Amino acid sequence: VIQFAALLSLVGPILCIFTGFKDWSLGYQPARTLVGAWLMLCLGAVVFSLKSYGLLPNNIFTEYSSQAGAVALIVLLSLALANRIHVLNSKRVSSQNELLLTYEQLSSALVKRTSLEDKNIKLKNDIELASVQLIQADKLATLGSLAAGVAHEIANPSLLILGGTEVAHEAVQNLDKR
Image 1 (spheres, rainbow, N blue to C red):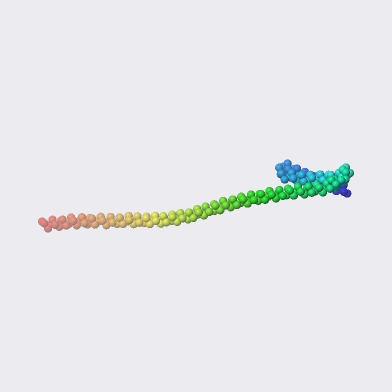
Image 2 (cartoon, rainbow, N blue to C red):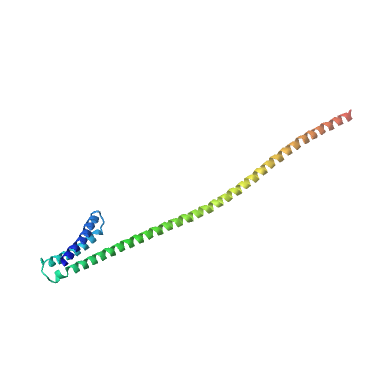
């Protein structure tokens, strides 16, 4: 029974090692730690299995080789987990810094936008005031033109009448002299 269990205990780690090598060949660097960890476990299991079949002597190294392999597996996987946590924290800090920079840029853009909106409102008010002033100036110019036309119309007949009265006055004086 122990020999059969030892044989089955080799199948799982071998599959993990195969998967680790596959991922490592695809460029996933943490897979090398996984491969090393499972190799240590397999080495311990192989040594224990060889001792169980009587191919290796029974001593303290062969007796506790599977436990030593398991400890090595746990240590290496713990180191890999710590590295992964460090990488994730670094990415989180980097992401937060990028988010803060984006927030500052958006805040600056919002301040600029608000300033531009205020300037636009002031310009609209200035345009409305200039438009009102232009309309007033146009009204005054029209009124001035109308007054000039009326004055001209009034002045022409007055001059004619005035000129005519002088001629009539001279004619009356000439009649009196005669």
